[in-house]
Image 1 (cartoon, rainbow, N blue to C red):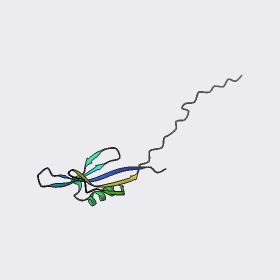
Image 2: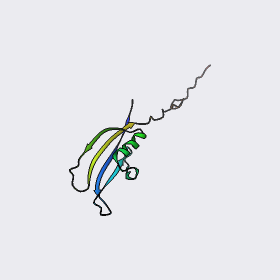
Image 3: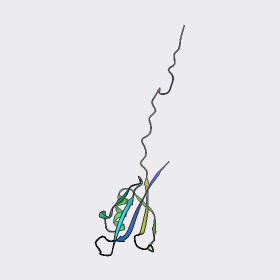
Image 4: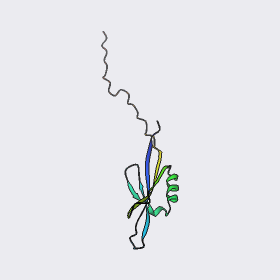
Length: 105
């Protein structure tokens, strides 16, 4: 059965640290629970989505909420990709079996 892993790319507008008004930052929420600022990898959502696509991610949904005041999330991009198949477990022969003895005579 095919299994999926999911990630989230968030485009957020926040107050700039250098008093120039607002800046746009991108944060990647990975399937392992990690949260990484990926702003340095591109200045547009398209650049980030193309980069994710190169890594096997597929865009499945997008949501937008520009009405939040101050520190707000503008866009959320929901992505998925097939999970890597786990290596099949190998059975050890003879493990867990009691040794059998036969007495003849």
